[in-house]
Length: 164
Image (cartoon, rainbow, N blue to C red; front, side, top):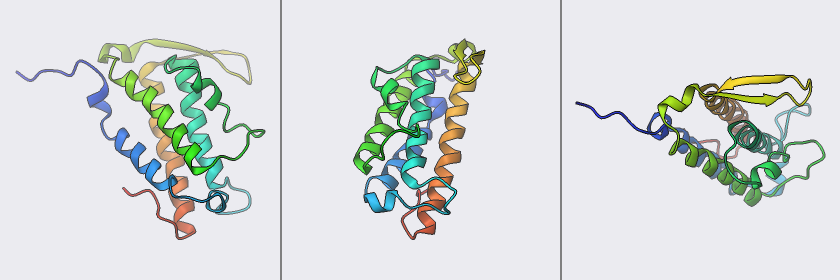
């Protein structure tokens, strides 16, 4: 008989590899490279990465209620008033948010996927509900969507893109 996994970590294998690809693509960038953008009306590389980090941090801290207080602070990184970050700071933000998610995946069970989570929309102040499964999927799709944007921006400027 095949033993079923007791935590969610095995179900989400591969996300950790994508995380490593993000870190590898960002780590060597200079401040000039982080300021590059595909077009004047699109986000620069720094802003794209801060958005990935900020979204992970906010969903993790406020909805999933995981990680520590650093996530609350990091969750503000993609706000318009926030400063640009160095590649080292961006890598740190990716690693801190990833570690919170990885630790939770190693703790949660398949039964935990259906738990109803509540949040208040910051714009409308309406209460929203989500399943844990939906939030995890949303974070994965968000990473991949904006990671694709990031990879395209890097490639347009002849910089090594995310290596899939």
